[in-house]
Image (cartoon, rainbow, N blue to C red; front, side, top):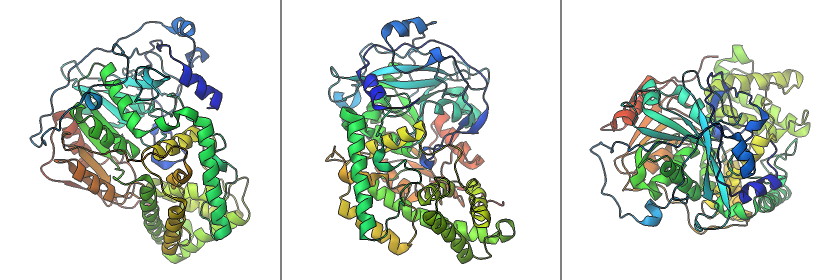
Length: 570
């Protein structure tokens, strides 16, 4: 489906209460549902095709009524209170912060059939989907435009006595679709967690099936081949800034009056509306990458609504441009590790017997693609491939093979992603990503963007700057004055999980965020170089400790250090 501006406008103006047909589905085929941007990683399954009548785009109330097979109103269930001994004194509660969800007072989620983007779980499990009606402008809950938040649910597989509530999950971004994640992440969770929780996925506003954002040309971001993302020289820097300016204009035109409202702050209020619509007094939460930022923001806004919270691969409490700069430095360190690793396996890859030789092969590849792109694959596309590969060590061998193949015969098939960067999902992701980042706090100035670029290039003349999305905030049409609050001393203890050498969300972010969450603990997977840890790396130490927290509320007495897999053997 093409997420164009007319569709987005139609979605915004849709005000009828959504009802979706009930249709449990079974059967799961695992595959990788990786978005072109790594920090929207979804390890998942093959979607099942459904009749065209199951389209979830907005339709008239009459059309909706024709789809109803039966309606299921969520049953209210009160979660067990948090039982760990480490708890800070609660902060004063206010109605605006604690009780107002923005959903209609009688709102409930009616679950039914899912869109084809949601895979089917293995029998006897089932997945069901629905849409919750919420205000576009969270500060104008009683009137104005309303949008639909797409929600998915896989019910707990245990007995009624084993069930302890809901586990809301988010895979990252910002910009990532979370609707399939209730299935794809749940499939990897420990059995005890699957038996205890209804796993709830959702598409945050601006993504997937929740009023998807559209930035049109996005300043030329999807040109093929794209402009070199590392400008060198005054003229190139001027062109780079002009592209950011055009990107901001394109997003203002495409996203229109929704621009100020596609924010983390608005999304956490949507999350609380989902909790309330499900009849739950509290919610547990598992957020990965940007999902950790979302969870920390929820804990700041609704600390007394938090039951158990796991923040995995943590985004630190920095402004988004500062985060992008820190990430680019970590990517440089990770790339050096990759060069040395490929050199140790010279017999396998043939790129040279030391890190300097492998770096030379890498640089020859990038220079060659900059001088003569191959079938729309140039330096921008190469940097995206490198960015994606550096975040998961299982992708290092394919990257090294791709470099070798290019140097041997000029082919780029081994470097090109399976899904083209300009597909509809990528376009929605990139539009939502920048919209959210630029709505979360003050952006950098153009002069700061260039100054930081110079500093990074002094560290390495050929950095990986694919993740510099917040640079566009220098020209954004909506300029918030304050940053989104993260964490609260009134929230229960939270469990943070991090890989020691994660280049996408550096571990320093987890260490800093934990100071805003008193009583919380950090699980570190040592000698690991990948992004995404719990129920992702297959580490028993991490998974046991995290499951014990989610099921029994067991907060470790001290931080936990688990032994990771080290670097792979190709």
